[in-house]
Length: 166
Image 1: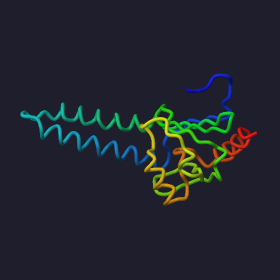
Image 2: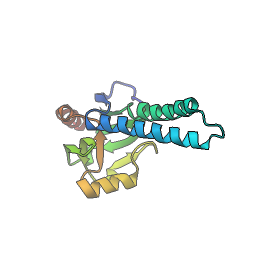
Image 3: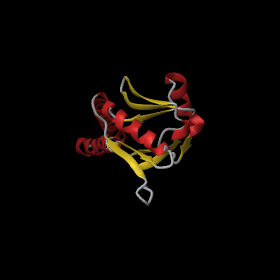
Image 4: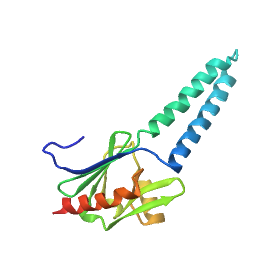
C-alpha cells in the first residue's frame, strides 16, 4: 500500500527479463509437461485432451504468477519497501544500509542492499524469508536482492535513498 500524503520519492515496477524470463518460461513448460503426465497417469480412462489442458493451466499459472514481477518504493523517513507479486514483503530502514550494488549471478539479477539482516522488517510470508536473507548475506554480503531491477535503476534508487535520509 502506498502511504497517504505523497511520501513516495521513487517507485519502480519491473518484470523478469533476460535469463530470468527464459528460466521462468522453461520452468513453466517443464511444470506443464510434468503435470500433464501426472494427471494422465492418475486417470482411470486416459484423456489426453483433459490431461493436457490441466497441465497447461498449471504451467501458465506459474508463468503468470512469476511474471507479475516486483516493485520497490522509497519513502520519506528513510524507508524502502520491496514487494513481490503485488504484496509488500520487506521494509528496510535505509539508515542501516551501507551500500547498494548491481548483482547478476546465474539467473539472479537485481540490486543488492548491503545491510545487516536485522535491518529488514518482514511484512509478509509471500516474499523472501529471514533464513533466505541470512544465506544471501553469508554468500554475497548482501541482505536483500531487489530482484528484476536493472542496472540503470541503481542511480535513481541511490539518489532517492539519499533524499529520503534528508
